[in-house]
Length: 359
Image (cartoon, one colour):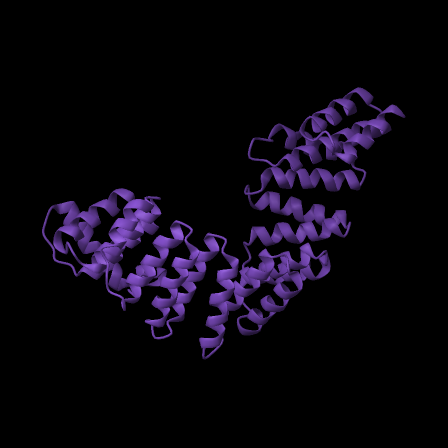
């Protein structure tokens, strides 16, 4: 297949070709480029979401190489990225070479776009059979199948990858672990993330995923250790920092959790409202009710349509509880009913009604 990977696009070789093309477009000159180079430029613009430049490069390529397979394939990739499946299929029907790996692969993508999974499998199989065991092709296929949630087919290709590889390739261990993670098979996911870390121990993503798996298995101590490794590898890994704090929250070490949430609040605005809520929750459990109310009131003021219903309910729940502690029955009921307006069957909020009646 053409070397249209992210690494190639960052190479000096491709950047020089791209610069020559863009200079020609900007200055109105003339330039001859091979069809494969133009196709790479098209694919690069597709990945960069620069649609106007995609069209310019395609127009240039089709004018220079009107019937070239690489240009047609680049055009199909563009059409698929735009959701134009009908037109993509029409161009795919122009490609007839039954032994061309790229032709077979793009035909598979066209079938996959229409969820014709058996037809897609046929073309992917044929593409791989003509690829001289190209494991990077399997990686491309797995990514496409994963995006379409065809996990059974992902497993099929992972089995082939493990059979064909002559030395361990960490990315396939990651895909296998991710597959088990998505299926909620946490014991197997943990096993495979650990296998990957045995090969490549400095992968922050893998430590994060292993941490998430332990977290969902309610083993918060091991989860915290994983997040600490992820942070050691990438000191600005705010996701791992947040999850580490969540581990302390779940083992009821509210003091340490609060310190970590406050530290993260000072470092990033990425999870600002979640962190503010978490600071309020920790202060509530530490019986710092005035501080808790300050944080929770600020959280409420910044709730918006992008926040989950769960967050709304948890904020209203805690504010109501603080009002109950302070014997403010009317205010407590106001927030209880705000929450019940979102989820009338919420058990905790319904129990709080009885608590307010005892004030």
